[in-house]
Length: 255
Image (tube, rainbow, N blue to C red; front, top):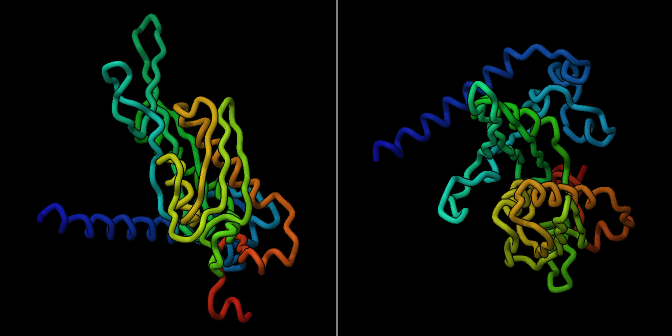
């Protein structure tokens, strides 16, 4: 019971620390200064014009993000059957001895159309994690969602509007629309990325060396970016309930 009562306090203190960091933030770029003074209030104003984001505080100011580490490493185990973990460890043999390095892959998203991933590597786990989270915020991009399954007549964009394929190395992944309630039929780390992006139902098919988690994740990101790069007719936005980025509700739709 004592452990459970401490968790909310720890989460609250983390939120307070983040708010204090934003209040004491001194922007170094023109884009950061515009966000700081309130001239830019929507992340789409940045992403639609392809402006590079060079400060993670810009994303923190415009989006309420959740963060997590993807399991790309594996602990030592008999016959290679060790448990999955967030840090991938490598070693370099030198005359002075073995020099280990740790790599990790961070995931951030708001579960409503925006997601980002970042790769961080360092001699220790904490700097690697901080690098990964910083790069994930700088690599934020928006997702196109919709209702593309012939089995579904929903008017809420809970899936994807059409099938897409992504590739990295020998790994190929195909994401396909699924009806409402089906869930994320995908590998665990892929499903975590889709959930952070706001996709609730999808079919997936993978080919290649999928045990290489970094290639599998990169192929998933490639597929998700193709959702927004494909040209879509205006009539399909209504027929397939397509939404680019966040889902507009209530007053936003009327506006």
